[in-house]
Image 1: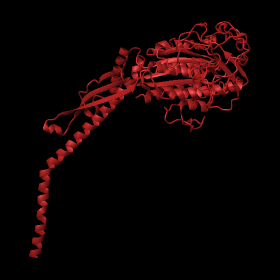
Image 2: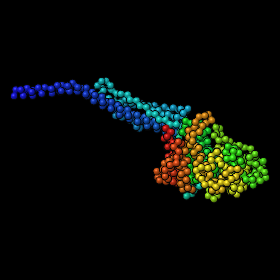
Image 3: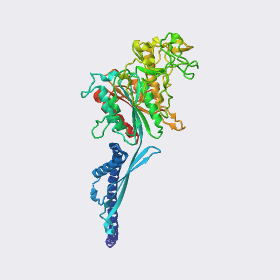
Image 4: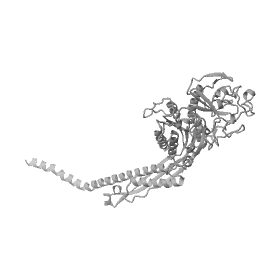
Length: 542
């Protein structure tokens, strides 16, 4: 029994040592717990402050488009960032205090065409246990930064006659009027003073209505306050056919002329129908003719007059005496330039548009209207410049033309996407004959090839590489019937419509920029379609 009691006493002795150790370690343990709580609180305040700065920088970047001048954009960015920051970080969040007013900096990189907005702020995170060591608070710092490339956009808008469809109105407006308002709202999403937006319109012919400029909202007719200003968009008159390929080529050329390889270059191609017209020069060059020798597409029996006022049947010769049908102010000696730095050479005649749809076809002279000129469809198709040409009055270009040129005015091939055109051996080569069916197929090929060319990589005269231009397309239903596959091909968009209007497209080119095709089933969806593309462009430019 004595031995057993001694063993019990021995076993109980260590318990007092453990209690003593706990007493000694308790201040350290409490301190560590307190430090953990204070550090955790500091990180919670830091995370919230960082979130507020990040959100403020993004909001400030977006707000740069809400003012009409560069200086006022910086002011707007500062105001927006402050409001966003205040809404997302209360000065007493989790007991924080001495929160600074966010500092906003806007930096323009003119070399790489990038704008960066930086928002910084500080606050003092409270301490509870660290006060025991004399630390009453910890200063927390956060930096939010958002940047995006400048964008260069050409709106390429269909102004064909079907855009006046009275059965597809919205809000009492025709599809043409709805398109104009939707395009205005589109421009309001971008930064005037830095971004550049222009306008090309097309019907049977094409017109550069506005070269891309930084004051695009003013020039195109958008006002931030009301959206009811007047500009180039308001001058659109919807009438005529659908020369989509010319619109694309003219629009891409305007982007090329800017020579901004660091910017996000994009075409917005809108149409409500299938292409029906293409633009041609009716004499080929040695480089474009399959024989390697310049040829004239005019028949020997044509009554068209050359610049010497001789018809073909009277010995006239468009090769040696070409008549320059260029615009309605043109004469036999005028050559029209497409502007400084143009990829395409100056235009000289004889040029014109060929229309083909179903069983109908006709020729349109003149072809081109310079920027600021009255849209050509406001005038008669007949022109004294094409004296003697029967197709101007009888709607039958085959009276004067023996074959369709192998390339259009911009060097785009007449063959490709759609096959099955009838040909004949004419002027030493196998050529596309002038029929309504052939022209209908040719203009599809021109449109598809023009889009492929725009998306490809090119080189400026300086030797600098120009990345492929992103092509976005909008197709409006309810007017004449669009070709879903063609618009997907133009945008190089492999995706199916989320609403099931069209399926996926497997033939896209992964080496070229991937764009987006948006289908607007009727005029009521048109503004949402334009805004969807604006959001996409803004998102990928960041």
